[in-house]
Image 1 (cartoon, rainbow, N blue to C red):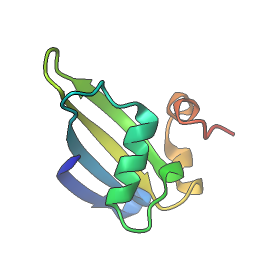
Image 2: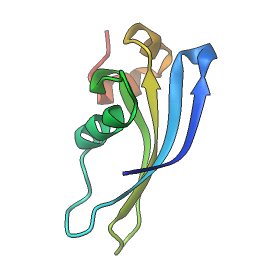
Image 3: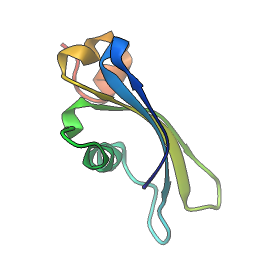
Amino acid sequence: MEVINRLENPLLNRVEIRFEWAHIGERTPSREKMRTAIAALEPGASADTVVVKEVSTRFGQPLTSGLAFIYDSVESMQNEPKHILLRHSHAK
């Protein structure tokens, strides 16, 4: 996984990351696998506070790109829409 762009957003207590993942010889990684890999890139981050917003895989190419948000805490994630939180199983 390669970070293309990293932007800190202190107003929303998150780091926004655009990434590309070359998965040669493998299937497209799951969102859970992406969350774990993104959390490993950011020191002190946990997969529980990572939200994968966009995922795009090119037809015929083993390349996936996307956008992910790494929040400081689970409470900060409550600004996300309900359907996104349900997708990541953080709905309350």
